Image (cartoon, rainbow, N blue to C red; front, side, top):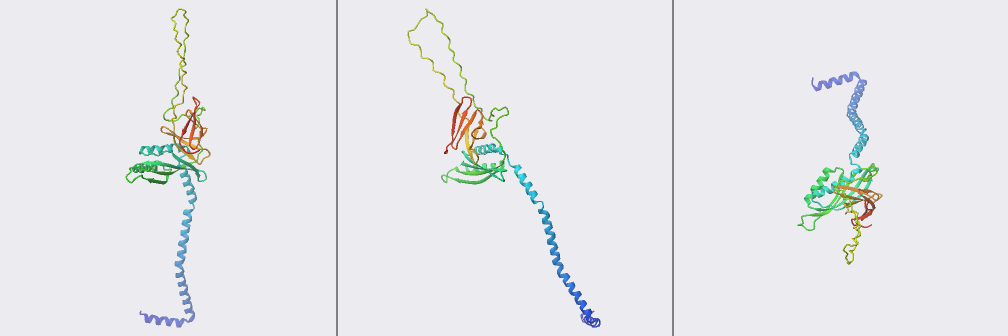
Length: 304
């Protein structure tokens, strides 16, 4: 059937049915057009609703996961008791690479509502540049709680084989009250690993024999010899400690003292082996050697 007869037939049917049929056909065609036009919009709206539901379900557990992640991160940090060991490891790793770190400055800050302690460490550096890079790589691998904040270097001349500079680090630890020099259970002072402090020599008590009288013995008219000088007063041995830096930002001034491979953080009133820490300032530490009750001072410069 061609297009012309089809149009003629439609005209015939329209004239026979009259205007009500034409109106109904027009309404039916309009409803279909409206239906087909609104269907894509409805589908798009439905897709948006479904995406919003999926996103809401995904975000529902975000606070719980964030809390769990924060707890896991806090648990992964070393405890406050590890401070002395980490400081000693920093200096020992530098010495193993042939670097001179000198004495550092340490400052403590509380973060995360007091649950985290941040220790800012400033160290002077001197050594070969390749050794410095190897040392920093070792720190990053062995101390994950340590962050490098700033590194400044310079050479005295362009041909110099060594560099000098200053390194700033941040060490993050879990806040936990601890006494780095705790007394033993029986109340005695703890001992420090490393070279033992030698005890002062015990001097023998001089004994004098009584001379027996003899009337017929040969006598000398020379004056008697002078009496023997008294034995020297026992002295405390040289201090076995070296100054490794001071910690600022706490209630009392604390300093790091090293003995052998052990580093200890002390303050006034602490005990360190046979020594009492009597006074700590920004330039010196006064120690009392208990066996002889003698004071000794470790000076490290600075101003009181």
